[in-house]
Image 1 (tube, rainbow, N blue to C red):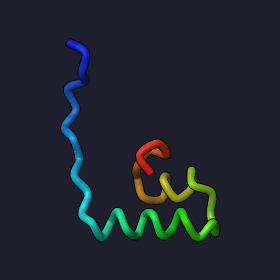
Image 2: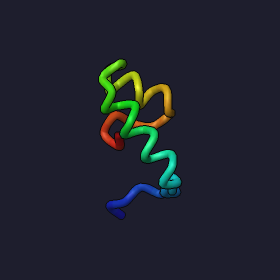
Image 3: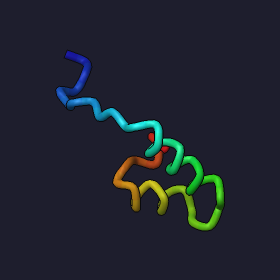
Length: 44
């Protein structure tokens, strides 16, 4: 039983594009962008 029993979230392409754009602008640290979006920093 190696995997956690969490449901995998699926994010729309628009959400992914916006997340990358926000992180790429360097206006905020990546950790803050991830927190604002409700996702982990590793996911971003």
